[in-house]
Image (cartoon, rainbow, N blue to C red; front, top):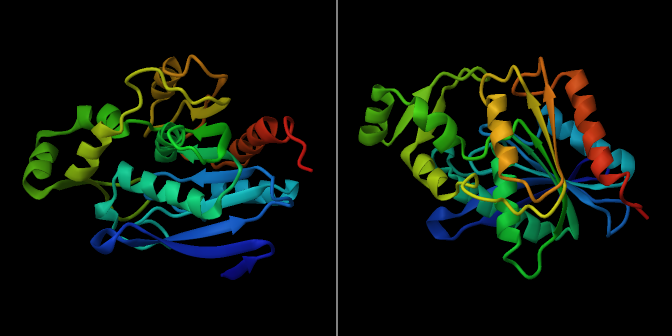
Length: 271
């Protein structure tokens, strides 16, 4: 365990058995008390735990004595494993393993893009476990649940479908990296098995969604559709007219911190 910043601990855990084993990198900031709520960062597709929003979340936790948990999925950032092996089920398994390792009592899930999908699947899986942290709230930033089925599959070209069938993957240019995005047949098929927008989603906690209306990757209509599947929970949707997919401008980050603060700090004595 190495201190990378005041109060911040770097850890690694192994997830999976034998050929599927991969090392997962974690950055954990303990709260000022053992009972402090932990903010949990769930990143997007090909993002990592050192991005702007993740750092802002960690800084907010440090400022208010909250715990903060950040980690990289396999094939991302500082974690091991091959990116092409990644699926929603695989990354969800790693998320659960991280929480079982840290053992927080209460958590607020902060999920960005694909991380919003992971967050929604996570609450479903945690509800099946006897000993699991209480999900106090969720903050979803440009959430992309079911994106393989809802956003990618309908737009596949004939060449991409052929590449999936013959090569097991297809590539597309990325606006955020010189390397192309890679979507595998395993990811697409596993995504269909992990769909959440098929019926009522019982999250059991308040949810605040931040969504840019100028998002070229996840149309704001996707967030509106998601809300339809969350009728049983306290759900707030904030549409940012000129917001893009990343929502990492200073004004976007201020909104994010205000939302987290409203959900956690205003409702909890940190002790």
